[in-house]
Length: 360
Image (cartoon, rainbow, N blue to C red):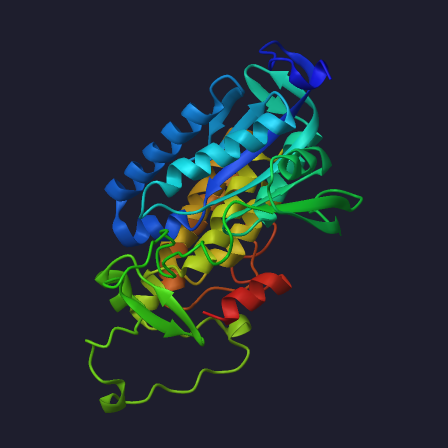
């Protein structure tokens, strides 16, 4: 029991601790919709909430743009931190919901960073969690249950990069009925009588602003669609041939795709080998010029840090052609974006990405 409640050591070495990743969902979509100033304000609010919640429980190892990596003294403290951060964000409308992953085990501390299988597993679990969820291993799950959370055992799950399945538990930071988020930008909403609303795919949704309502294409103030020319039928096998979208939809990344990209990029930042996650982000980003270009910029920076001069040259070329390729639908679906594949070479699209891309 003493070991579970000891303070987090700042010295290099190997200590058992709880590692937790917390991320803001759909942050890229929020940034794209509301601009840099709003995005920065949201991140500032998030970081302040984390700093207040973790005081006396552990430390912020590093910030990850729209996420944080935390080292916390024990599972019960980790649950308290997640609950406090979530409660702070819920005091404010127009903030994204949280998602996260937590794992307890040994870590290697070096130069202020934390490394090892426990860190990698927490990162992977955060990548699997969806809006308002915290995925975790056994020890944090027991602590969450003891704190009164509703915890669901998901069973053994295959986790990318691990040889054996891992027993995974899921706790909800907010119940589905309470997680009301704008489908365009991902901001959390407390619907009221004047909140813009519409029915999408047979379910009622709400929007944070008239602008997001208009972007959804459901705003009744827009021209009557019965007076418009009907669009051409969507061609089959659109993943292999490239999505045929109008210019507006190519400019704006759908929230679901933006979340997939952000999760993959967060995975890349915390992984020993960032390339598999960067390749996944690339495949998801190809139809949209800005995220496609952004992923190649991150690939270029990664290759430069690793001293891979061949990859640096290849990424410089790809950085130039990525945006135009997306805007003109001239990109090879499934291409990993690496120099290990030719510029025009097609590749397999992972089934979950194929489903997500097909629905856009």
